[in-house]
Image 1 (cartoon, rainbow, N blue to C red):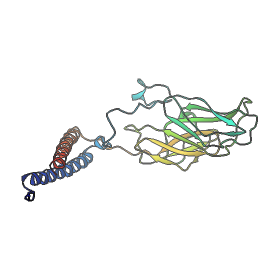
Image 2 (image 1 turned 60 degrees about the vertical axis):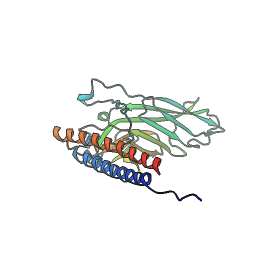
Image 3 (image 1 turned 180 degrees about the horizontal axis):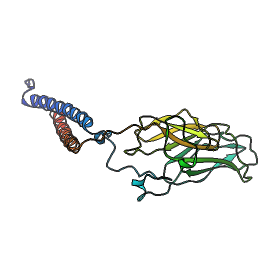
Image 4 (image 1 turned 120 degrees about the horizontal axis):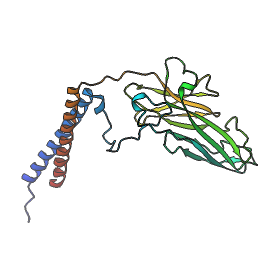
Length: 259
């Protein structure tokens, strides 16, 4: 008859490793949170990766960004029409700053048409009427035109709403906690659209009933710049947090191996 196994040193070691791993993870969370309080630049999602986002392309770049600015992309895109009705389609400008999502049936009752042509043209906000209230334009405005091919007849209204997603920039002088998309038929008066704003991705989405001009607007809020000493402390805290995270993972893996 064999003797029962003892929960001796290996079990105790696994328990200690698990405790150390949990303690290191808690310390990492605390340091990461504290570093975010010292510097806004430290408040980035953990899974952002090492690849920076592409630089925004402006029609009217700020003076400090003009040297490296590239013109924004536009273009004409075709959405197939079969039996008088458009198919579902997603079109994106080459720079990724504008996305149009055409649901099935954006055009109906057009038996002679072969495609819906959507034309996107970047515009400078200074050429248009000011936005209402304290709103300012975040990035470019875009004209969205629609017509039927091959006749070239313009489309005045969509049978189903056309979704538009606009990327918007954020700089030290252009920052807001909330953004919205505004629409205009001719650039002389603006209507606010119900908007889904995703500040982490710097993009806003709304639905269009008609072609026209769209722009992202927001009320600028100041960014409190951290002092050089605070920035260095935030970086040091982030490095320490990363080291603790690695240590905690090591202890947790050791605890699983010894269990």
